[in-house]
Length: 89
Image (tube, rainbow, N blue to C red; front, top):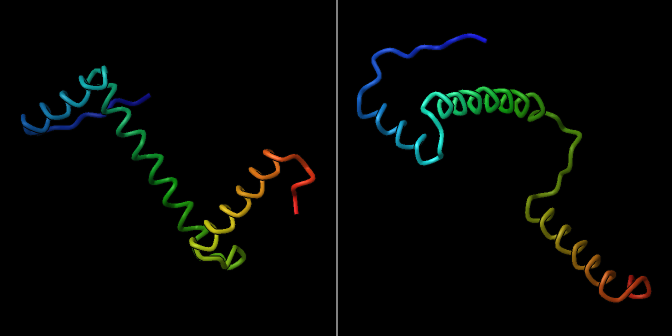
């Protein structure tokens, strides 16, 4: 593993970060490692989204249409579970 060092951090910034770390029951080092790790994963996720963002082979449904379809499927499943297989249309 490598060590990172940040110079010239203002006192108020360090105190705010230390308070957030303490609120989570973490040391400042553990808290900052979590933040840096999340940022690294976020950049990987953004690169993946950009890679697939231009694809044209996915669904053409709007988010409202997807939500409606999911609601309908869930209602059908609930009816099935409540009444047994004879209630499925």
